[in-house]
Image (tube, rainbow, N blue to C red; front, top):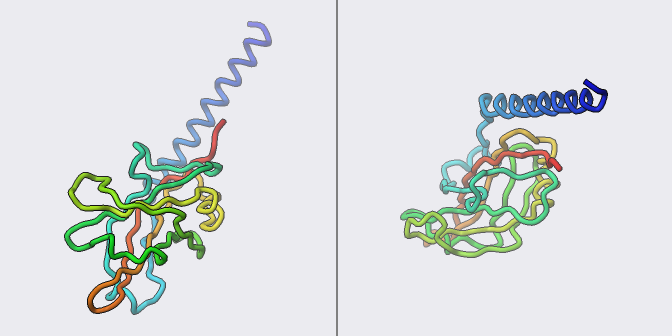
Length: 174
């Protein structure tokens, strides 16, 4: 075998080894789970209504790359108990248990993304802003829960609603 063939063989083995390490890291992080979200205020939990949230509902794979440009979609699912049109637009934020930062959506729309007959609130966030404000770059190859918190207007006054969904943070491969 000449030296060029040996180099190709070694490079192939190294890339296979690196891929195996990434897969093992992903499997280990999925097996370990994550800590549940703790509310900002200790006595606040009884006044908070839960909502169902989906990160990247239009994608087959729920992940985001650390250097991804563009937007990430997060949806609040409507139901019998939650009319998403009552959510105050300027109150919606996304945060992470990994940092103290919060990010507001740059665009919102109402559409039924899960075909259940209820309108859903679909919010678009800048990927770069999410990565920097929520400090997600250091979480690559881990599933990170993203927490959506908003205020809803009801007959008896404003009420806080919250929900979360996980997304996998991947490094950007070229």
